[in-house]
Image (tube, helix red, strand yellow):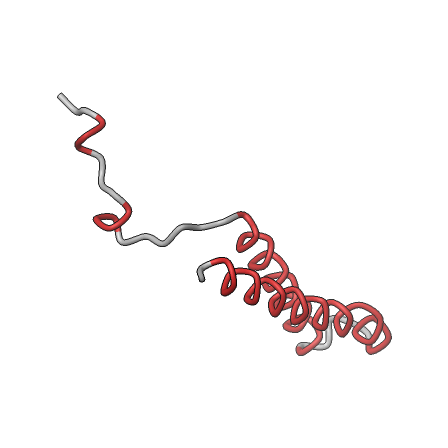
Length: 76
């Protein structure tokens, strides 16, 4: 019979705590990577790259920096 005491602890599982903010960040990075790949193979026009991919890239970098700072300060 399995009880609650048999479940692994955070230390035993080896998995870090995962917050929803990381999921949003990974979705942004995935979207950016997809757009960059499409631009690299020529599937997107240069105008679209300038109007969508570049701002998305800057937004991803900005959000990444803010989230990293938030997580770093929260762990102190």
